[in-house]
Amino acid sequence: MNSILLATASNGIAILKPLYWLFGECMKLLMELLDNQYFLAIIIFTVVTRLLLLPLNIRQQKTMAKTTRLQPKIKKIQSKYTYNGNDPKERQRMQQKMNEEMQNLYSREGHNPMQMGCGPMMFQMVFLMGIIGIIYYPISYVLGAGTFAENAQAIQDTILPIYRELTGNADAKITYLQLNILENFAAYKDALQDAFPKIFTESLCADITTYRESMNLFGLDMTAVPHWKDGLIVIIPILCLVTSLGSSLISTFIQKKNNPAAQQQMGSMMMMMLMMPFFSFYISFKVTAAVGFYWIISNIVAILQQLFIFKQYPPKKTQARLMVENTIERRSREENIKKIK
Image 1 (cartoon, rainbow, N blue to C red):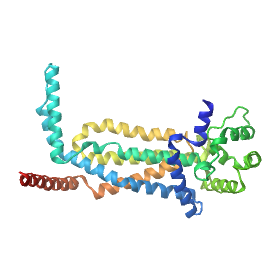
Image 2: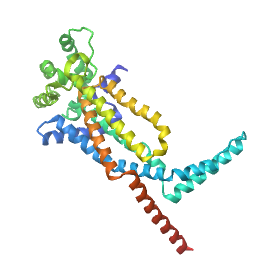
Image 3: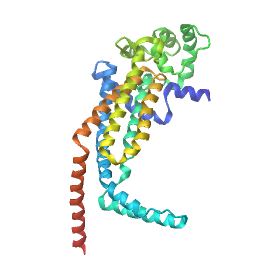
Image 4: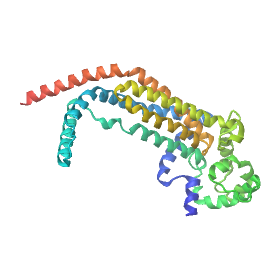
């Protein structure tokens, strides 16, 4: 069990390794093009991934507008098949009738409410896991030390006494091995080169030193986990909270504009959307500041993206446009049916 945990902490989750590798190669290319400007590379990476997500978000916006337009018809069907009796068979029959009529409505209108689902969110989660992979395991996936994982236990055994001496804690443990090496590489370098000359070559050691230097942002060590006692670095979790709140509030505002009829649901939705920023605030004290930096950039880009979509696809105009498009499409289908008959 300990060896499995160490392998995960030192080299990531096995099933995600192809994703780590892909993102690591992208990050390596960006850093080469940007002269090892790590945080500029993260910003560009985040913007590009958000742009890839843009078509999904636009599609979701259109689906929400179409759902809002159909709300009066949906309510009419629901009221038509409301059953207040005690007969379970009759209730089931009415429910089935309602479902059939709803499906017929969606079919006539060419609408699929499932398109409003978790696609964009899942896409974001995939990219987040990939980003976390290259932040937590850069020696393997960005700097290309391919045999690091196979020697993780021996590497940890080699540096653990040095780490305990550095911290002054005889019981200190290393949680994330690769980040720990980055943070304390100057103290570990000679021991690692002596014990693992085929892994920690002069070339890799030079790359680690350069990479380590690139993880410094305005004097802040971004390989460190933020703590209230550590001074200015707490600005990272605070900015995570502020930008996440901003993104949630703007998202709530847009949803209200898209679907004014759902005002009664907004209270519970608002609570959920406010919980997530505070949850990310808490988590940002558990992960490295570099992860928090990614979240900040991602939130800022998300805010700009939401505002762009809202301006380009305002609810009322989008609903009117969809109504015209659906009318034309429905008449075209009817004409084709007549021709077939």
